[in-house]
Image (cartoon, rainbow, N blue to C red):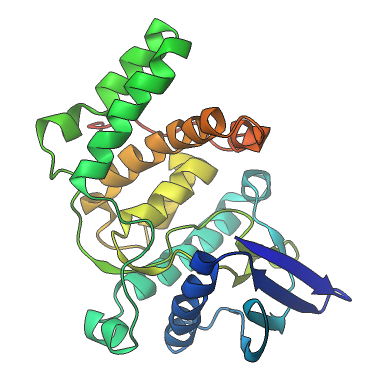
Length: 272
């Protein structure tokens, strides 16, 4: 979506590659300005260059120190320190998801790019059947059919509440300070907007597993109401990446996105 240039490890420049990336830039700027009023974690402070643009407006910000938060970082922490990191994430998400919608909409922030209608979820299932099933063993097909059962029984099953959310809490966006055992900052709110908060937990489930998300749930009140949707969403991510790989044979990176991710996600209906 963007070309990124880091100068002297201090200044980050982002140059959108297309119309969609340029349009999304403005919503991301609004999201960052809003969230900065509610949380104390470091977020990019943008300068937007719209007049001196090169094809499209571009941005710069001071680089936030930190390394991508990997699952190994978490597992090497003591139980107490894992709880501290989980509490930091839980507090952050609770704050973000509880920003009044009136405040979000008053900034001109629209729907998150992660939003999916019942029709789009159904289309994903049909695409998986048509394009992936010929390449899958029977046990994998059975898992997919079982995974989609709640949605097939109730097309509105994935309709969750609408809150302010991020939508892409990958390890490469969560900047970790190994010395403190805590997050130092968060970057990339390109998918942020109004949407289902379960999407944020789907990312965390996929990256770090249910054990760590349960720790987050000790701080985040109300996780029980969204965990099933998050589990479903997390289970579809690799299907979506594999579809993208088949559709873009010149880009094998889609088949490698899952490397290093957690796989200890509980099945749907297993309780919390």
